Length: 274
Image (tube, rainbow, N blue to C red; front, side, top):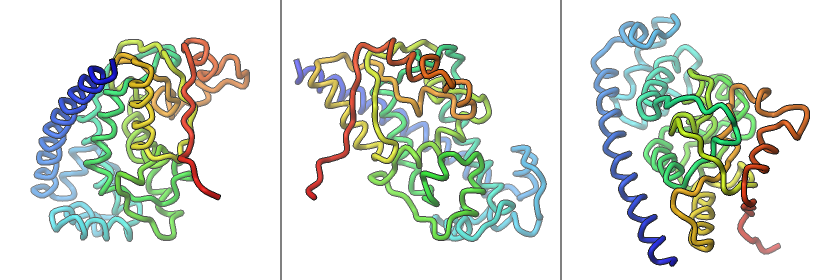
């Protein structure tokens, strides 16, 4: 019953989009007001930021009030000290948008649903204009954003249709999960979500293309909208990958998720003419 499933999925997406938009607007407004009204020293105390060069911080902290373009310029040319305030602002925003829900001990039970993927997409849609792309494949394994920008010759601004999992891991997944050393799914639910499908894909595809593929799979298969899919980026604890990926492949989270799943969804690149 594809029309019914499509209608149900559309309604869930619209409801989620409205909730996320309202929540995000409130958070951004609140935190931006704090940034605009506080001094650099007060911001450091509020977020418990480490001390840095006093002369370098106010411009980086308060440049946001001068408009999007000015604080982007400041970020491009800033060193670690200048980026400290913005990093704290970003971390606080993530903490409020994606609060920790609880531990899900078994990695194979950290699958993600389309509704939860939509929440990620809408967050990226609203915030990726503030993200830069220094070098996604290298930055994805970089624990510190400042280190990534030090290596970047000419970082580029991002749009939603170019955001892939390397970008998402750098700007959302790793920062949001660092404090709790958890998986991203544990920021979305504290309930086990046993996968029905294991997704095999490439991190370089855009998150919008990935989501369209999963949504199409739901419709073609006539699956419930809350069907869980196992996706490594969201299921694994990115700050403790050595615990998730064992030297013995049969003990890894990937093998365990494959055994728990009922099938494999293989996501391919769009067909290209040679």
